[in-house]
Image (cartoon, rainbow, N blue to C red):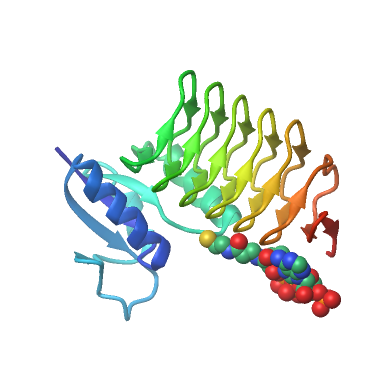
Length: 205
Ligand SMILES: CC(C)(COP(=O)(O)OP(=O)(O)OC[C@H]1O[C@@H](n2cnc3c(N)ncnc32)[C@H](O)[C@@H]1OP(=O)(O)O)[C@@H](O)C(=O)NCCC(=O)NCCS
């Protein structure tokens, strides 16, 4: 059994550690965090700042528990180039259909459902209770927040963030970098990146 290093000891990092514990794959778990006042998180030690990760890639699998999509992408690229082993975390209660591909560094949290034929990219977050229905294409570094529902054959571009409880109707395409607000309902393609909120979703930024 290997050891797991989690970058980011905040709330998201604690959920990641909890999932890792339940997967029973790593003999030891530790955190890195740039906030020196955090010395432990959940029941695990914070053993240094995030810059220490590169020195530990031979000793640990490394998971990036950073919510911000762009920062997660940057850290992922650095670690990937350096040859780090970046695992995929799937909570035992998540339901994953057949012919689903899930990229490295992605987490699928408790109660999430990913139906058949989906492709989920690298370092995505499919958060608690979110669903992605059949044949969805979720590009790298996307965050689908808790309880968001993505209907069938939806395509979501790199680094997009779908807010908590949002709904995306079937066959819709959402361009890279888009932010969909909490509770929004998206029924048409979004071709220009920006922040979209409301029912039906309209651009506010
Ligand atoms: C969409 C969002 C990112 C916008 O945040 P922001 O860029 O700071 O924007 P603001 O708060 O300045 O809001 C801009 C306008 O949109 C409105 N607005 C913001 N979020 C909204 C939402 N979810 N639904 C409806 N209106 C919303 C604001 O009231 C404001 O309207 P006003 O200009 O008339 O006052 C944020 O409100 C949101 O919904 N975040 C999702 C949070 C989430 O899912 N968290 C899960 C973490 S796991």
